[in-house]
Amino acid sequence: MAQTWDSFDVAIVGGGIAGLSVAYRLICDAPWLRVALFEATDRIGGKVLTERVETEHGSFIVEAGPDAYLAQKPWARDLAIELGLGDEIIPINRSAFPVQLMKQGTLHDLPDGIRLIAPTKAIPFARSSLLGPLEKLRAAGDLVKPSHSGSPDESLSSFVRRRLGTGVLDWIAEPLVAGIYNADPQHLSVAATFPQFLELEAGHRSVIRGLRANRVQTGKPAPPLFESFRVGTATLVDALARRTQHISRTACRVSGLSRTAAGMYSVEFQDGNPVTAKWVVLAAPAEAAARIIRCTAPDASRQLSTLRTETAGTISMAFRKNEIHRPMKGYGLVIPAREGAEFNAMTIASEKFPGRAPESWTLLRLFFGGYRSPSTIILDEPDLIKSAISLLSKVMGIDAKPLFTRVTRWPAGSPQYDVGHLDRIKSVRASLPPNVSIIGSPYDGVGLPDITRSATDCAKQLVASSQISHCSPF
Image 1 (tube, rainbow, N blue to C red):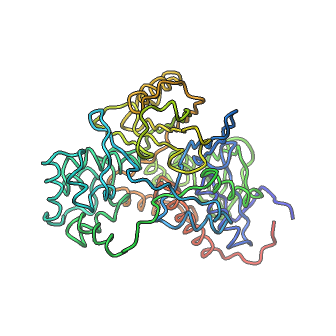
Image 2 (image 1 turned 120 degrees about the horizontal axis):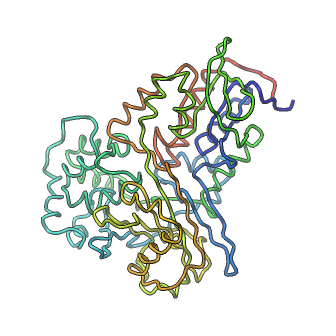
Image 3 (image 1 turned 45 degrees about the vertical axis):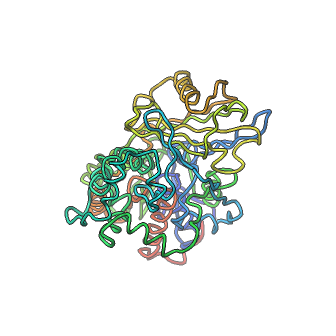
């Protein structure tokens, strides 16, 4: 029977990785359910966006959104394997010094053994030029400092300064950890983003001791921290899109939600006739979800409206290898907020993963926007490129014009997990009407693994709640 677009069991609003994952899981686990996915834009995939740039010199793989996923969290990898993409998964290239940090305009190697905020190896940390003697001594104070017995949540800034000191916060934790979330450490919730640090403090009375204990217990070389796909992260959403294309509609902007006399939900569109659904999954940005449920769930809508976002942007550029007169050691540079730079970080994409550029070429990607460089996000493209080339000239000795550039701006691209985030989201969900769910990066984690995990959990709950069985396929 052909799909009819008027009444469904489940309506999914949003065609990013979250909405696609829910849709795919429902198709697999509950084929009797009538499911529809509605995406406001004309493209499925959300912020996962890969472009293959063809030039006379060969192909480049350019990422506009995430370029990898954290391999230690299994959910994205498991989903990829289930979709038949196991052979497409590639690990990040290993490097003795993968990341460098800028301090007062000079590049410093990240000491071996650093785990996001703290050292696990004493000698490389002691020899590092990144921190001064007093800053290193203060960091070692974590080994004897008592555990905290105060609030169950605090900011990253408060936690790191309390355990390891201001030097570690400014020159290691802020650029490495806050950079992942494009967030100000003075607001970033440790409980919502890195609860393992709180657990290490509670269980070992020291973050350093806890990290060392974890390293000793494994007794094995650390596996690759990140993985991606041979032709880019869009491999994952493209596979999901193929599996869900028969239930998906693009250019369908949902404008509101209301209850019907029969206890269903009427899903209303900016253009077009409404449809009805028993369950509604809001996999859209928090601002869009707040607007959609404004009349149906005003309290939840108000709370969603308070969730903050930050701007984000990237610029990708390609150069010949012989045009780079001062090559970097690894594949990453992070720039602390204290530098006051126009860019937050840089990735040498062609060194990070194989196959991103032809053999004699280098593909670079610079990050801007957010709380560290908010003015950069509004620069005209020529000015932005000029600033990027100026930085590359200082850092890598590049004095040539790029083969091509690609600029992407995400005006509200980075959800902010402020202190109290977990309680805030719990309160939002308690205020939602029956059979309405929220999922996605604003709530339970911003990385691909966390998003796919929460989407799978949501689908399982829908299947468990469903009383419909043996429905005719559509």
